[in-house]
Length: 142
Image (cartoon, rainbow, N blue to C red; front, side, top):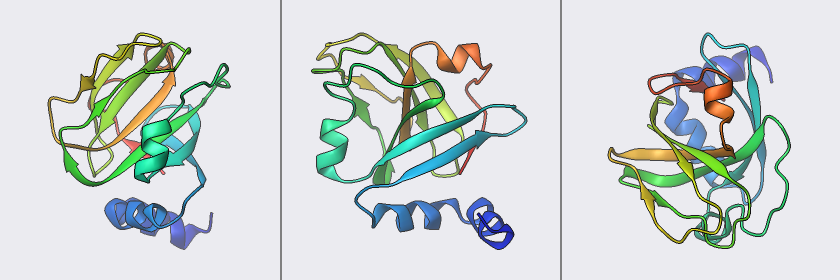
């Protein structure tokens, strides 16, 4: 990524997300402020891809996951229907701050909802956030 694009992405995260919302499939790399870890994330930004999520996926590679991007910030909910992997989810604000982190149970149809208005959610292998010392309040960068 060019230096100018990196500056743009850091200064205008919402505009960056809108740009990615226009594409039907993409992968992005994410880092975390003051952390030496990165993630490769599949972008899920349409109703269809958000509904499917990681359903039926049997393996999720180390340091990879899925980012769900909604058109606006509000209370968002996730579930694990047809998802055999144990996952953790982080609900994230439009500015990239992690608001909440939850572990989820494979195949559960119970909704896990954010308590705060969130614009994004990142799903990773269960325990990934804890293992990498990623906590509520940390900032994710794209």
